[in-house]
Image (cartoon, rainbow, N blue to C red; front, side, top):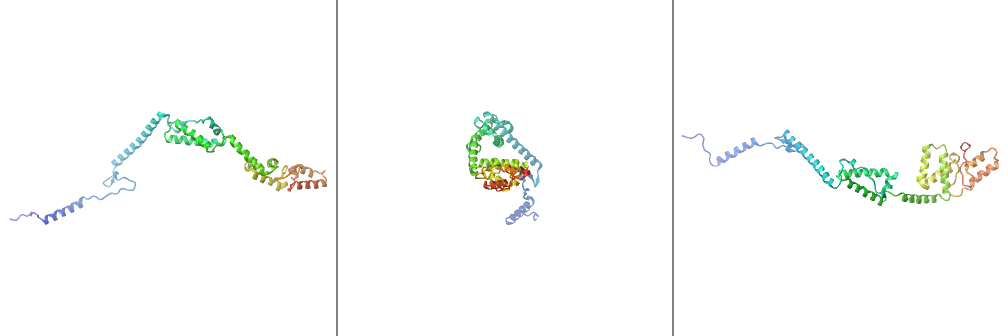
Length: 285
């Protein structure tokens, strides 16, 4: 009698095993999963976001943040053995410079800028866990740096430099420099065609612009004559001729008792003195 389940031998057995393996592999192989950009693959399970794994990751991040805070606190505590580390940047307190540097902090031209730099140093010190003593040392070094590099100057140095500048500008204006400047100032202040803002601008221009600015205002007086002259027109250079101011000459010129000959003489004197503009009008004297 022949058995229905025949035993496989040789090549037939090998083929049967290979076919069975192929089928099993097709049934059990899982498709490879790629998480979205910016997401960690460890947060997924069988292609789906795992709530448990996300929770674990959040807890791990919290632990890292807490560790960082603990490390910062420990560092501040360690540094505190060498001085006081403030809890906040404002606690560094007011800074008092050494006596040699106090004048710079009292100078109105420097005060605002220096205070801004001190605040920046406070923030730098706080961000780096420095003590109050360490912060003060930086400020002391800062003072030395700005003085040695000429960023700030003492009053004596500033005054000496200003005097040198004034001397050079006065020489450019010539021998009548003082008279020109004085009369320019009077002209600007007294001429009612300039409003207050314009007067302030012109005076400041002469104060800071040197000989060039003074000459510009002087040309306004000389060139416009009666229109803008005001009092005492003086040439920018050379002699004033030793004659009275244009205001005084105008008063005499327009006086009803002044003769025609004297009026002609006044005109001649002004021309010889270099005063080519018109005399001030009667309503301006």
